[in-house]
Image (cartoon, rainbow, N blue to C red; front, side, top):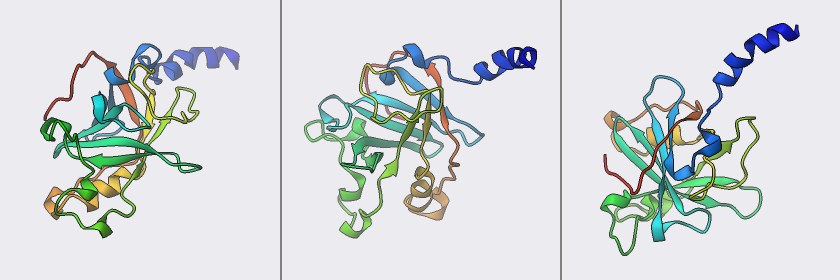
Length: 182
């Protein structure tokens, strides 16, 4: 039996992300499992981060980029993502604004718009805090609520995006210096 376990070890370990141990979060690139083409990355937030993290999180899809900043609940709420305007086109003095309070959005649209962000270590234990610049990137990220937001909050039915609840896996670690468009 041990012989079979050792024979399978390279296959099992090969399925785990190998970049995480030495990859600062702001250099990490992720791809969602499956064939829907979603990718994600952390981007330095400069002076416009939150008390929870000095990074933004961007999810890229066929319809463009979806930008978020991190929030953490007091108590048992966990980490969530707050949708924000694109930092590259935001007023540099004010920084990106929450989409739910941007001009043209009503106050009743704000309820329930934060999305769970669940980072995992390679051994599948949850990481309790959002990443900071310089922290090791989480090898696995799950965004269980984001699909509903992309489906229902995108405007017309032609703009709707199907996003599975599949995990995002760390696929590359490259140096990036600022938020990029497109």
